Amino acid sequence: MLPYNLDHVAIAVVDLDEAIPRFAELYGAVAGERERVESQGVEEVMIPVGGSHIQLIAPLGDDTAVGRFLAKRGEGLHHVALAVPDIEAALEDVRQAGGRLVDEEPRPGGRGARIAFVHPKSWGGTLVELVELPL
Ligand code: CMX
Ligand code: CO
Image (cartoon, rainbow, N blue to C red):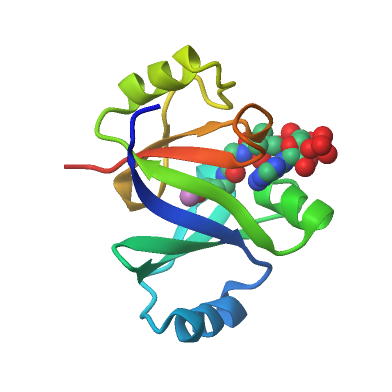
């Protein structure tokens, strides 16, 4: 895959109210605005760190991707996200590299971005998100 920039590293948490001040202090940074992304079943927030971000994600319910992850693994690293200029081209890169796509087509994400996920079982055991931010 092309050497895309790292947009964020996401950490799954149970309770954003508790986690935001804790992580802001850990990273010595100020958290951005919280955003509810119904289509992904999460509420999320970005903490800018070193030209990239730590993203905190909390589930909107037990029957969501992050709800299931927390039940199975507990809080911790959930995914790595790459900033891509053209998400359709990036999806094709992943297909060519033998990656299994969770999303064959881009979906709406936070910050007005278009996003798509690559299955962890096909990508080094790490869930990878492709993010095309609006211009
Ligand atoms: N990182 C690494 N491995 C993971 C994982 C993760 N985040 N989530 C699941 N897995 C592993 C599981 O441990 C399991 O492995 P084993 O079979 O060895 O036990 C395997 O993948 C299947 O896991 P599962 O519990 O059955 O989970 P599901 O198949 O129901 O879902 C996935 C996995 C990736 C398809 C689902 O989490 C998904 O669709 N994710 C994309 C959407 C998402 O995560 N949205 C929230 C973030 C939104 C945002 O960033 O804005
Ligand atoms: Co993300």
